[in-house]
Amino acid sequence: MYRPLLPLYWIQGRCAMTRAIPPWRSLGTRESTACTWTVGDLFCGFGGFSCGAEQTGLKVLFGADKWQPAVDVFQANHPEARVYAEDLLESDFKHYPRVNLLLASPSCKGLTRARGRERAHHEQLRKTIWAPLRYAEVHKPDAMIIENVTEIEDWKVYPLVLAMLRHIGYHVDILHVDAADHGLPQNRVRWICIARLMPVWPPNWKMRPLGSLAKQPHVSVRDFIQWDYPKWSLLDKPGRSEKIKRQVRTGRKDLGTDCFLFPYYGSGSGLTGRSLDRPCGTIVAQDIWAIARGEEMRMMQPTEAQAIMGFPESYKLLGTRRNKMRGLGNAVCPPIAKALVELLIIDRAARGMRS
Image (cartoon, rainbow, N blue to C red; front, side, top):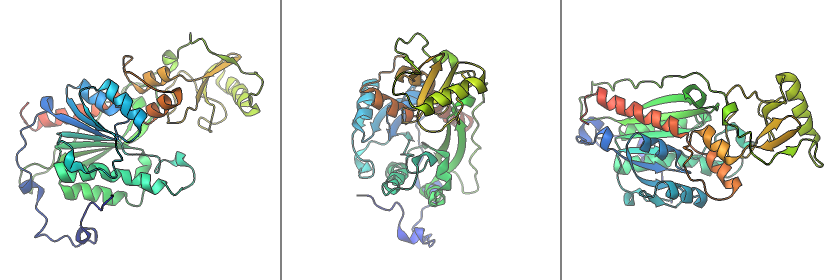
C-alpha cells in the first residue's frame, strides 16, 4: 500500500533536529567506483535507461515495471538482470537489492499536457514519482537519475519532491535535455533530475557543480526513414478522411516538397507537416506519425521509431506493433541515458574518487 515518504512532523515544517541525522554524518564512506557501479531501473519499460548505462560499462542488477509487454522486452535484452513485474506503488523495496545508481522514469501520463482533461486516474499516475524516493529511503544509492516531462515543474507537489530528496540526503541538479541537441533526430525535451548522495564531508563543504551535456548540431530525420519499405497506400484511397488529405495538400504547399512527416492523429506540427530536413517531432506512446511520399503515405514503423529513439539495431522488440510503438514512445533514449551516466562518472573522477 502507498505510504507517505516523510513523517508528518517534517511535512508540517517541524523537523525535529534531534531526530534528523545530518547526511554527512550518517551514510558512511562508499568505496564503489564508476567502473564497478551497479544499476537498478525502476519503471524500466523497454530498457532504454539500462541500455545507455550498460554502454558505459555498468552492470544492471534489476529492472522493475508492471506492464508485462515491457517486462518481456526488458528481459529479452537484459537477460542477466532480475526483473520485478509489479506495481511499484505497492512494492516493498526492502526486498530489492541495493545498487549504486538508481535510474527511474515514472509515469508522465498524469503530468504531460498531452493527457487532455484531468481524469480520476491521473493522480494515481502522478504518485509514481515517489517510488524512487522510497527506494532511496531504504537503500541510499550513491546517485539517482530520474526522468520525466518538463511539466512536472507545474505540479503543485513538485517543490515537496525536491525537498524530500534533499531531506533524504541528496544534492539535486535539474536539467532540461532535448534529444535533438545531442545527436538524435528527434525533438524530445525531458526533465532530468540528477541526485547525488552527500558524502561524509563537513557541513560547510559544497557539492561540486555538475557538468553539462555538450550540445551537437541537429540531425535530419530523412536518413532514418526506410524509403524501401514495401507497404505504402494511396493518399486518395477510399475511406481516407478529408482532414488527412487537406493536411497533406497544405504540407506540400507550405514545405515545397511532397515528402514529409505529418501527425496522422492529433494536431502536432499544425496543419502542414514537418520537414524531413529537421529532427522528427516527439515519438509518443500513441502511434501518430505518418510519412507522405508523392501520392502515397504510410505510418511510421517501429524499426524507424527504434532508430530515431537511439536504440541499437540489434535491440529486440517483441509483441504487437501497437505495443512496440507504445513502449518506444515511453522509453528513455539510450544515448541520452549514456551521456547522463557519463556525467556522473566524470563527476566522481573530478572529486578524486577511486576507480
